[in-house]
Image 1 (cartoon, rainbow, N blue to C red):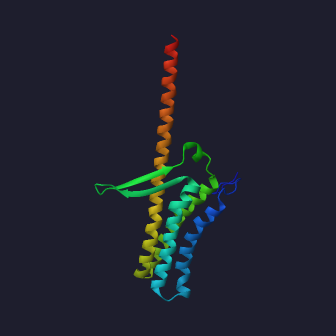
Image 2 (image 1 turned 90 degrees about the vertical axis):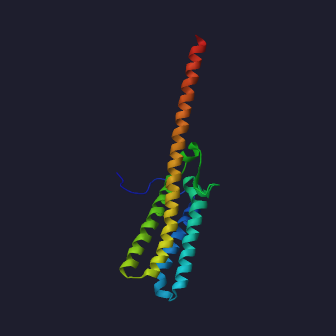
Image 3 (image 1 turned 90 degrees about the horizontal axis):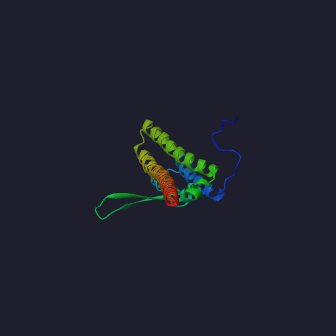
Length: 184
């Protein structure tokens, strides 16, 4: 019996997308952590780290989310000035065919990145480095925005699938009833 956290038995269906999904997260975190050893300018550390985190945000939101888990989200402001979340997901059949390993990598790295930024934020607090806490805050905000967006999108997709299943069952039932009464 395998107690692995990662699904086994299948390869990544989209290894290039998985690579870039992880690359910008790792690059932002690695640059932030290692920059103290090589860079003395806070401005450079801030700009490069936030730029890498923004690239990660964009890649996750617009590319890897669609390819790895079949979900896409965005937020619009309507005519009344209200914030409106918009979601897209693949149809039920396509979602069922999504690669489990790709999905696993997507969700775990999404959450682990946020946890890493929180850890680095606590470390900045302990060291009384408010300026570095600003960098962490921006990067954490981008990470959490993707978590919230994709979590809401996944819930919306599940709700759509349930509504579709209910509608299909009801349609089949009424069709069967109509057939039964038309014979009589």
